[in-house]
Length: 248
Image (tube, rainbow, N blue to C red; front, side):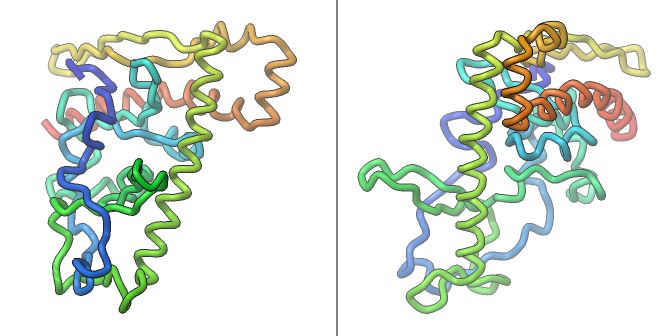
């Protein structure tokens, strides 16, 4: 963030990924993957993309915002400065007990579009440092994907479906003009100030003014709880300030 709370989570190359490629039963016949020993791959970001299913859990630990852009992206704010994730400690582990966003848990796998065959393909980040011939989990069992790889595929597919639900919710927020910029300034204990910009939040006054028919429709879709979670998550900014001072 130009001290911006929500730097765009997704760029041309998906965040965290440096060399994603499709899994190949020949090339990866002996390839194994080890669980990450640390979360250094997520240390240089201050915002992690979120899916709507995650709002209730994430709101307990992070401010939830929408990265500004043509299609706003829900995100959990994890730092108050650019390239800063306050939830990763000196030992490079994620803060114990804090909710771990699905975007982080998915890594190094990802589903990517195969335009030629009009389908999604399971890919893995070759630049992750987690691949080798002596890891914990084989990617293939003979000619077939291993149980571990199938589980990764199912997880990625579920996230893709939740992504569609997230897009629908965000489109509704835009349709009713419920998102507003929330540039803010946070005072640190040392007297310095952190300028927060580039993100959107739900406008509570416009939300309260929604017609009853829309409120009923949103209740049936489960969207009211999502809005409340985002509004309540605004109390988590102080958590970030406290973490920033502990890290100083």
